Each structure stands twice: as C-alpha cells, then as structure tokens.
Image 1 (cartoon, each protein chain N blue to C red):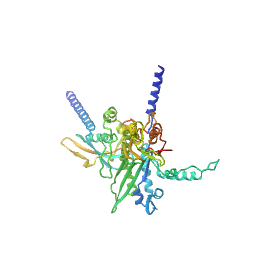
Image 2 (cartoon, chains in turn orange, green):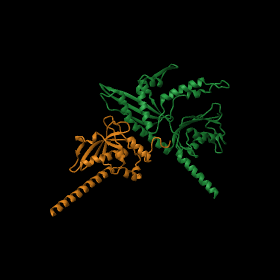
Image 3 (spheres, rainbow over the protein chains, first blue to last red):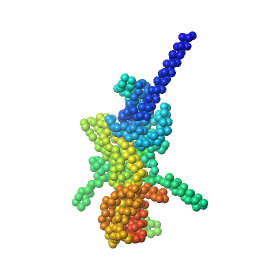
Image 4 (tube, one colour):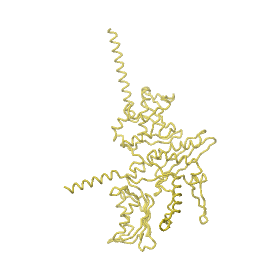
Length: 174
Length: 319
C-alpha cells in the first residue's frame, strides 16, 4: 500500500513538474512574440485578401514553436511586415504603422494575442501544419528554430483593426 | 443665465458639426499610361502645324484590349473592398459621349434655344479625376520564360505630384498565362499602393490639402500686381502673399512665380474645413481672398475659376 502511495506521489510530482515546464515554455514563447523574436518571410502570392508567409519561431520544444507560429504570423502582419523575396513577393508594410499604437492599445492587444485569443480568426495553417525537413533547425544545444507556413487573412485583420479605431481606413474622414 | 445656456448650446452644436464633418473625398481613376498605349498601338496622331502629335486613344484601348479591362477591374475591386470605390474610365467616357449627344439634341420648349456652352465648357468635357492611377505593364520574355514588369503611379491631378506608387517585376514563369501573371502582379502590388496612398491621406488630414493658386489679370484692367494700396503703399502681390501666410495651414505655401501680370502659388496647404465646420476645397478657400480683394481699400472686381478640388485661379479686373 505504501509503495502504491509513493508511486502515485512520484507520478503526481512529475506531472506538476511537466505542467510547470510546459507553462514556462509557453510563457517564454509569448515573451518572444512580445519582443518580436521571430522572423516572417513571404512564401508566395496568396489568394486575394490574404498573405502566405513562413514564420520562424524559436523554442526549446518544437511543439511550442509550431503553436506559437500562428500567433507570431498575425503579430508580424500587425507590427512587423516583411521585405520582399522570391516567388514574386513584394514587401509588405505592417498594418499598424504608428509606433506608439502598441502601447496605446495595450489592453486590446493583450486580449487579442492571449492564448486562444481573437488572433486565431485571421490565420490558418498551410500545408496542413506540416513542417518541411529543412525548416526544423537546431540553433543551439537547447533551442530550435522552426519555420511554419501559414495563411493570414490580412484584409479581414485590417478591417478588424479599422473597426476598433486602431488604424485608419482609406476612406476614414471622407 | 439665459445667455450662458444659449452660448453652451451653440458651442455644443458647433462641436457636433465638427465631429461629424467629412472632408471632400477625392475621386480616383485608373488610366493606362501613354507608354502602355504607345507600346500597344492605341494612339491617335494628328498634324499640328507641321508637328506630328500623338495622343492616347483610350476608347479603342478599352474596346479592343481585354487585358487592360482585367487589370482595371481587379484594381477597382480591390479598392472598393477597402471602402474607396474608383471612377471607371470606360464608363466616364461613355457618359461624356451620351451627355454630349443629349445636349446637342436638347432644346427649350418655349424658345427652341439650345443648351448654353462656352468654349471653356467644351474643353472641360473630358474624363477627369482628382487622383490618377497611371498604369503601365510590360511583358518580359526570355526564351519560354515570361514575367511582368508592373508600375502603378498615383498622381495628384492638380499639383502633379506622385503621391503613391507600387512597382516591380514579378517572378518569371514557364507555364503561367499572361492574364494569370497580371493578376498576380496586381495582387502583390496593391497593398503597397494603398499603403502609400494612406500615408498621403494621413498627411492631408494632419497638414491640410495641398493646392495650387494662380492669380491672373484681364488684359483691359488698368491695375497689376505691382499696384500699391493702403497707407503703407503695399504692392498687391505682397498683400496676397500676406493673406496666404495668414490663412494657409501653418502658413505653408511657396511663391513659385510673381510678375506684374501673374502669380503662381504652389504647395499651398489649406484646411479641410472652414470655421463653420463645412468641408472646403480650393475654390471655397480662394473665395475668401476674392472677397477681400473686392472690398475696400482694394475694390478690385475679380473672377474665381476652379479646377477640381485642388486648383483655383483668380482673374483680376472683372468677371
């Protein structure tokens, strides 16, 4: 009976440790997003109203990098943009060009980019979320750099930000 | 007490009118460039006193070239999706033609008189917009490979400034048809174009609309811009400059030319609304200067001539 209780105890301690570890990694991934520690590159010409991009995210665990890629892609379209490249890509300016907008609307963006937040409405995984072999890079002993291709509905995202008054539309004021 | 309430109500009404006021919206139209028309053979030639002059034949381009329709339609659609529908040039040309035909046939029921039209009115009957989106594309071919060089320029019809742009060469393709490459070119460039147009509008809302003002005089007027007025014998040209410095947003304007007979002011920044909260354009702005010149001590009768939202001329010496 004592052995059984001690086994249960060990399992419980391990579960708590795993959960702390997962939580810490998720927090780190979110911190990376806030600190803009990710790269976005154009992957090709998408259908009208959206952008096909490859997002490179950093994490100890590749699983978290894949999850975080969605958030990073939307964050990238809103604040970072990307330079042009091959496949007929041209540069894309971020939707929010006002440098103070992120802090000015901090509450909105915190809620928008929370885990499972509204940002998920504007992004879908391309290639069924599969990672190409060359897009899983081990950059240090403890960290991976993972490239995930996603599709961001930039027109819908822009309209949502216009509706919230965070950015101006072309016809605003006329 | 009653006076205070009236003042408060007045202030609130003014505040409400300002908060709901909308600036005059510029019209935008996509126009194939002269280069494109020339390269594709859509030009008209005529002999102007010994010099062969070539002008674009837009009507034939729209009737014969499906690619130009495809590109313009796609651009129009994408701009409409952004809440900024564009004027369609092909429809504008057709409307002008049908209006001209109707005007020629119209006569008064009472007197049989036709519709009045001055030579200037006839000259102004062309398809126009406040901002021209000038479109050029060329197809590059290297062996079986094809790519599209795309150039879209946003030009202010009054200041002649390029206010927005998007240009570049698409990815070369062995298999894709030209219409597909064109569609990709529009898709990849429109975001950049609308982004630079947005920057122009943001600047306009912050620093005022940029216009051009010309001052001219009728031949038979005995005064000119060097005529002196008032106690300090100030020249009329300087009086007009002082008025602009007082009324332009942040006093911004350039005196490009000033002679005894004419003056040209460029980069004049005018407010988007007057003190009543109403949207104004170049004509409404210049109207105030016209009134000042009519009144004492100047007493100069004058005529205000407008061209769209951004260009106005005052002709001194009569209507």
